[in-house]
Length: 228
Figure 1 (cartoon, rainbow, N blue to C red):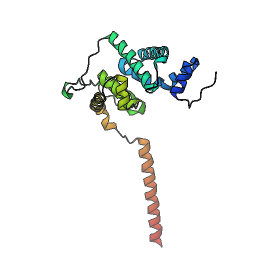
Figure 2: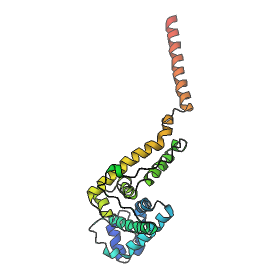
Figure 3: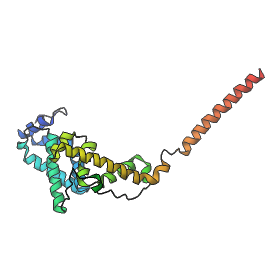
Figure 4: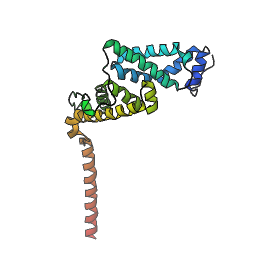
């Protein structure tokens, strides 16, 4: 088997897999694992089930690889397969409540904040968790669009193609998702705002020490000048 260069495009690797180099399918999985995981988890909100969905989506993609004709990017095609699998799992778990992209903001369900936790919000890793919790609180239709557009960086057209909805619906849902996240993050952070940009004691000591040293040096210079 000829080694595959990391510079090979997805389409190149797909062609080689179709030609019998099935081991190269691993490259495609490793390239897209992050996106497919995020997409699956955006729908089901469970890490273990998201991994199951990933596995099944990859199996489905491999089995139907002959149907991929490169009219769209492989990543978009794979995204659509993963979304189909995730939504199917979701429907089997409980019926999905449809969200009309033309609904008014006042009819939107509001996020439920679980309350601020200043200690957990103090570090960057906890800030990430705070955002993840807020994203998890979004209604499904908005959560998935937010993950596709703002986390995975898909274009409006790519997100619309993956979800099989219109581009205007993607724009509307993204706008509302961002607005809901802003409100929820503000509520969650409310109790921690007083501690934001905290000037720690060690930094205080360092600044005070430097300033006092500068003052003493200035006084010494002044004293020497006055004695001349």
